[in-house]
Each structure stands twice: as structure tokens, then as C-alpha cells.
Amino acid sequence: MLYLFGHNFDNFLLPHIYPQRRAVLIARPILEKAVREVCRDLHPQSMVIADLGCSSGKNTLLFISEVLNTICESPSRTLNEESPMEVQFFLNDLPGNDFNHVFQSLEQLEQECACRGGLQPPPYYVAGLPGSFYTRLFPCNSVHLFHSSISVMWLSQVPEHLGCLNEGNVHIGASTHPAVARLYQDQFEKDFSRFLQMRCREIVPGGRMVLTVVGRKREEVFDAGGTTKIYELLSQGLRTLVSEGRVEKEKLDSFNIPMYWPSTEELKQLVQQNGLLHITDIHLFEMDGSPTDESPESADGAPKGIAALAAGERMSATLRAGTEPLIVSHFGESLLDDLFALFARYFTSYIESEDEKSSIVVITMSLEAKH
Image (cartoon, rainbow, N blue to C red; front, side, top):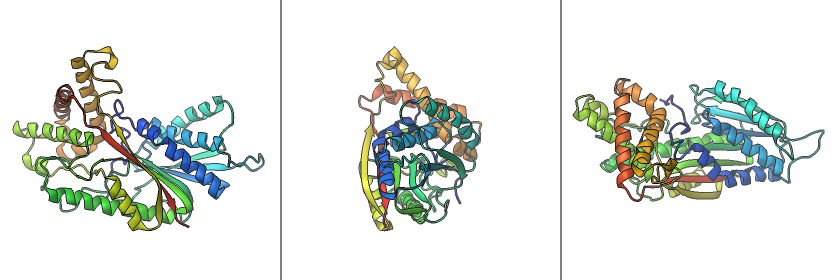
């Protein structure tokens, strides 16, 4: 059973703190290198590029813009005016994604390209492709470059046999039983292996794949840094509602978020097991755990307490945007306002009390399809 919620963290991973835009920019050198290598090694007359888990925010257009800029600057670009290289973008997400918003935003991208000085981008075309990236999406040997940013951590489903084993937690937390963590690991291994298997059928020999995921620095599955803390605070909010009689304990115990944050070693091992791809680049980036790009003391020029309060509210609103469909489906709508008010309060206390915030880890890797 596949989850019909967005693949992407565009509304989840903290647009005020750790925007998906920041993840795209962090991965930009690796993406640019992959695009240049496709141009240089494959010389496609028509390059097919797929963005998997594209969502519908500004970051979708940012990805397209980055690729077009790189192609413009590539020394391998075909300069024959009678037969220039063309680019076909496929934007993929689940059917519930707002593709209409994406298409309406394309005019803005065209205007930016028209205003840009220097080399003009190649002719390009954009199409939406609804469907789960855990299934086949393209014909065999048809895609030159796959890209996915902050999406592949979404599992296809809550781990099988999990039931109420993760008592009092909505994800892997400090009190999670090791058996629960193992179920999450098994589900990710199954899903990511299937993801790679599907893409290997669709990618051309020598094609590239650039994947960016939220992950963890340590092999210890219980410590994913700042992401672990966020969900521990959400669990704390739900436990408070249980203690107040607002939520049944059984309801909390049976609710689990279908995401997993892998380590670099886990990713390497799964790619090696696939056998049809090899890793050309893999990098781990740490984003500091402060509530904004500035420190709590200086954000917006506000005192520390006021800045922390604002950060709590922003974090709460962002987390709600990404998890609300899951929560409403399981608990109903009546508790939403109170739950995220509690989360905002707990996160504010965390910001005020911790001198050093846990970092959020982002892993980017570039893969090449073997010939």
C-alpha cells in the first residue's frame, strides 16, 4: 500500500530554517558536475531529465534553472544553430501534487531566461508525471539524468508489522525499542533498493543520478541529530494530549511517520548491492541547528526570548504543513491547533535551553549507470 502524501519535504523541512532551497544549493556543485558529464560523455541531441518528488514550490523552478544554466555554460553544449540540443524535463510527484501551480509558475522561469544576459538556454520542454517513484515511470533506456532532492526518505508505507510496538513515539526516538528501528531500516532498504531497480531500467547507459536526502552522521540509528529532536517534540505534544484525555493512548501508539534518515554507509551498501550503478561523488553536509540563518540572539534584531518564540511558531507551522495529512487521517482535525501550539512551546523551550543545537544532516550522492 503506497502512501498518497507528497514525496517531498518542500513544506516539511523548515522553509524558514532549513529550506529545501538550501538543500538544492548545497548540492548544486554535484548536480552541475553531473549535467556537464552527461553533455560531455553522452552528447544527447535531446536530453531527458526527471525530477522525482518535485513538489510544487519555488524549488522546482530552481532545479530547472540550475540545469539550464549549467548546460548554457557547458563547453560540450551543441552550438549548431540549425540543430541545438533540446531538453525535456519531467516533473514527478504523487497525483495529489499541485502540478497546476508548477505549470503556472513556468512563465516566471521563461521571463527570467529572457532577461538573462549572455548565452541563452537551449530549447526546453516541461511535463508533469504523476505517480510513485517506487514504481516504473519511464520506458527503458530513456532518461539521461535523474534528480531527487529531500524526497527518497519518504517510505512507501509505514513499516510492516510495526503496529503499536513504538509506544509513545511517532518515529524513532530515544525510547524506541531496537526492534522498531530494525523495522524502519528494513522498510527503507526494501524501498530504496526498489527505487534503484526501477531507475536502472529507465536510465540510459552512462546516465547520471543525483540524490539528496536528509540523513544522519552516525551509524547509530537512534541519533539523526536535529530531525530526531523535532519528532521527539512532536511525540511529546501527543503524549501531553493523551495525559489530558484528548487522545487515546492506543491511537498514539499506532501512529508512525513513514520516513527514514539513512547514513552514508547504508546508502553505499545499497548501491553496491544493486550492482548496476557506481558512486562518483558522495558528500555529507551539516546544517547548524539554530532556528534561523542567524543566531537566536540576533534574528530579526529581536531579543533571544522573542526570537526563540518566533522560531517555535515558524517551526510548528512548517511541520504542520508537512505532517497534517497524516495526522488528520489518523487522529482527525480537532486536535491540530492544540497539538502544534504545544509543539511550538516545546520547541521554543528547546531553543532557549540548549546552547548547542543538533545539526541537520544532508547527504548528496551522484551515481553513474554502468555501461
